[in-house]
Image (cartoon, rainbow, N blue to C red):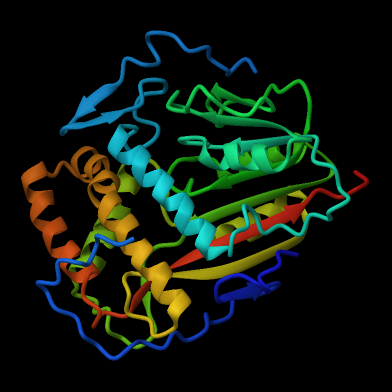
Length: 344
């Protein structure tokens, strides 16, 4: 089972979801004019060709070309910097761990797969920490660096196609893929089939909408309007963006055992009193502000037909509320892991 013992405050779930622990807010000192806020802290495999890097340009942002439109976020430098920032936020959340699955130290991880590797930063760190492992990172965009550890390779690949890997893996890892995969049962089934007996899988993802334990996130807030309208936009595009809470049951249905779900919390800003949660909240705010436009443009303009100008008005209100330390909101972050039976 996943081990949250030395990680950020979290709730372990074995058979049922229980309430997340209460976060005590600090005495409010928020100022709307505070300028320091936001300043802190196989056959499906395609070789890189001109068609893959002939990116889509839309609303001033750059999007992937291979399987155009399948991933809703940009892949430009601005978004890549944000992904690296998010990596640090997850590193803080898990207290310096790259994964939370309770893989025994004596279990050899010969082959490791990073699904949706993005900038490749997780795969690079894992390969550096585990030189004995052969690591593969796959993504729709060839945005990874060229200078990488010798035990790491990157591939442009579509994980929703049939998997044709020639060898199985001992660990499959993926994070922040909600909204990116249409057929989750197929993903878990193919993960199960492509793991060696005793191998592990771990997914880390955000669950929407945001929550508030003291009612300070109002139903008529701009944040709530943004999220609920965004969910409608993703649905209109034929995808789901509120899937994290389904991973545990879907893993079990695919045949995994020792499945455990741990729920962490990302405060929307520095409102918590606890020093560690305050730090996580500051980084979460930076991550949110950096991703707000990126996470909204395709969903609202493609999915709902909004103009960019209309979206900009809404996002201005959302930014204001995200910085407001009187609003004690947080995003539930799910870490779900499971093991393929040692004998199948």
